[in-house]
Length: 396
Image 1 (spheres, rainbow, N blue to C red):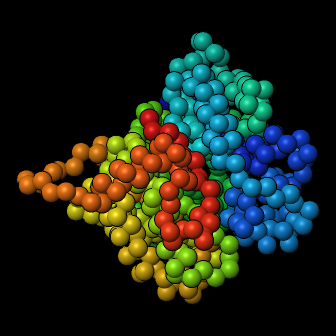
Image 2 (tube, rainbow, N blue to C red):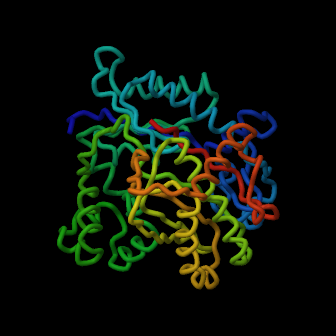
Image 3 (cartoon, rainbow, N blue to C red):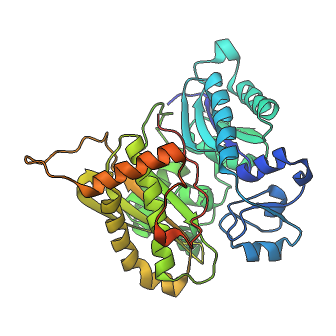
């Protein structure tokens, strides 16, 4: 690991809402909510009133009655993301995209050509503002973990450099929630033992953390609390999974409605997989309950596949198992992902037989390719809004 702070974490601020404010001058400096039934994104003016992503629209409007609600425009967000990532790659060839609106950049080899990392980060922010018209926050540090923490502290529209000799001075006063992997449940468990800050975690021995949280989590948090993170910026790494998700209003949802939404999500995911010539083995159902806690259920298949029927059958099994908990706690988000992705090479049987499911997938893909993704859909989806397709980073 380099002894200099050369890793940048660049994160667009309130991305969807910022694009809307950029494109419509009437929305600037006003509280903006993207999405009506469920908030997909909130401007910082709305966040100041307590609104957050994933919140039900009715609750958000009670907190911020003067908010302007706009429908999502995924094509606009994807276009803005592409322009920003072009600027990232013009800055340095070492770019690791994390999502549509954030990335790590390694500028360690650019000092002689472009100056110190702090100056590179400042120019990057200025270029994104001038050429794309969006605010972006950048954290600069020696490790990926600390760079991401720095950008979170610097938001919105800020720049924060953490020098190597001031890492722990900066990190230790922060709340434990700043540590990767500390969600509400882990934070509550730590606070029950009067562990409130990163410094409190650092002062505990690794064995004590393991006894509280288990082996993996205990070692992980002990390392982060001392800013031990050996990971480098990874370029050209193909995604290990593909997924799609849909946010839901807080009101009750019948199993048939959830099944229809799940079918639409599986259609999207498997279509992307076939277009990218990828197959996968692990199907994961992702849920966010009405209390904002999350859960996942997964199953690994014997053979890799991109067949819609196979993936949907497995996803439906996972959903059936989860229905009692959904009925008890409510659900505000449902998602599906296929992991353990390979390059689409599937072992063929010794004796060939026609595969109606694969033929149907091919026919559906051809129709959608020619006439658009909405040209053909499932009958079960005709009376259900499956929501906008969430943009994803392109395959590398």
